[in-house]
Amino acid sequence: MDALPPLAAAAMKAGQRMLVVAGDGGARGRISDALWGYRPTAFLAHGEAGGPQDEAQPILIAPDMMKPANGARIVLLADGEWREVEEGFDRALLLFGEATRAAARAVWSMLGQREGVERHFHEYVDGRWVARG
Image (tube, rainbow, N blue to C red):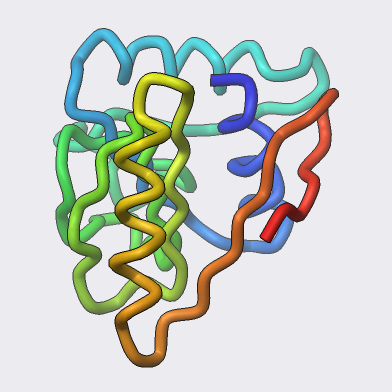
């Protein structure tokens, strides 16, 4: 969960909107808490999909893939579970941990077989992203 707020902050700084997907309601709550508590000086505005202000949210948290009401062009799959990314997104980010590492490797291999897909692997180490592959 530590890696998500810096990614969201970078997207917001670049003027981008983001859809964050996590199937579990508890995970979505932890994501919201992490975004609220990221830094005392960094307000990461966000909301749960289905709210009255979806269009205005820079970061929209949803239980599954959807056409985001906020116009997000970046989707962040926060629970380590790959979902096919719908048209309209410029970038898909898959966050995973030890429990979902094997599944992430399978996704990496699968995406390597697709034409036109650019893959990058970064690891979040000591508060910064390090390119690994």
